[in-house]
Image (cartoon, rainbow, N blue to C red; front, side, top):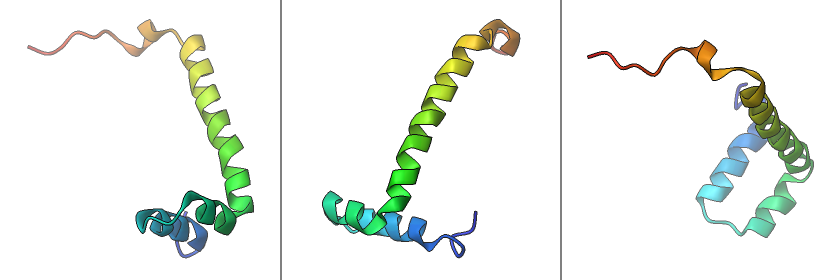
Amino acid sequence: MSLLKHPRVAVLSLSLYHNQSLQQVVCSTGMLLVAFLPRSVATIIGTLVAFLIVPTRSLGSDKTLA
């Protein structure tokens, strides 16, 4: 993803960096924030479900190299 194709991402980051109020940020992002929040929650849920499904022993042991 290029910032030139999606300038709102850069604008949101810069506005948070310059200490704008959260209400101004929410008003300026609009539908972008509405699309981002459910997808981020779905990513977290998917990660937790995958952690429960995939056995951790298949990832290898925790032995360190001495």
